[in-house]
Image 1: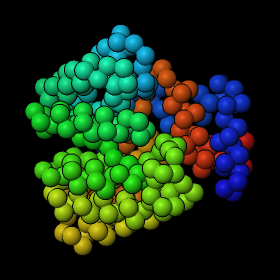
Image 2: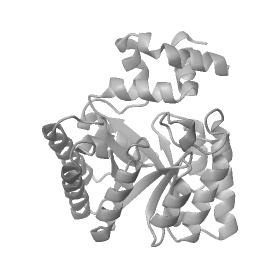
Image 3: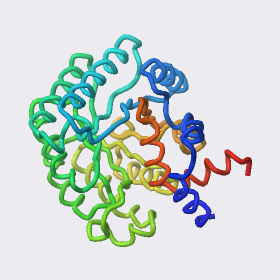
Length: 302
């Protein structure tokens, strides 16, 4: 089965765009903000909160970066106008991080300030290792003046131990995920290159440290065993349900999502939308062969 999944992931570049678009409908809210709002309303009605993400990253021009910021302003206004239980997530490379860090910070702060005005919050997504230090620096500068900004950290990186120690010297809002980018083995914890479950011990260590430091933790995973361990850890440490939440991707592991929610835990769904549906879909399928295999089987009725 694993071989089949990997084979399907590698075949993604040869799959017609029309098929990729059909398959992506479950995992992307749509191309427009209106479609995203409709999907969020459905999820809110089911008891889930949401993080909205405008698809696209690594823009090449200042104009594109400015447009991304404007897109997020519209998202925040739509959340306010429709009284949605939703926050937003931004990728710094979509705001020009790689070619103008000052512009990126200026635009990110504009978004964070707009979110403050709407009583909302912003999470800074973590990208590949070439961006890690830059994005931590951005978060550190923004949270000096703003309390409504959080940061994602990736448990498969060795450096995350030091990063978590630094960032929790005062309570912070952190999203802990396993990590999805293909990195050189030298950056990764032992075993992570070939076994995703090898990351679990490190993931739990970071969550434990955040709990002990009084930080809010967004636990981003579809690993049922890991979720059980996080729940047990919270009970062991006496951590209330207001100090953490679980986060999952739209359309992924929905039975697990529903089970965790039914247990009384907050579950936030990461909902991407926008015109870059093809780039997002192919990246996700390549990063997670199990999803590629699942989609292929669903398509042909296996």
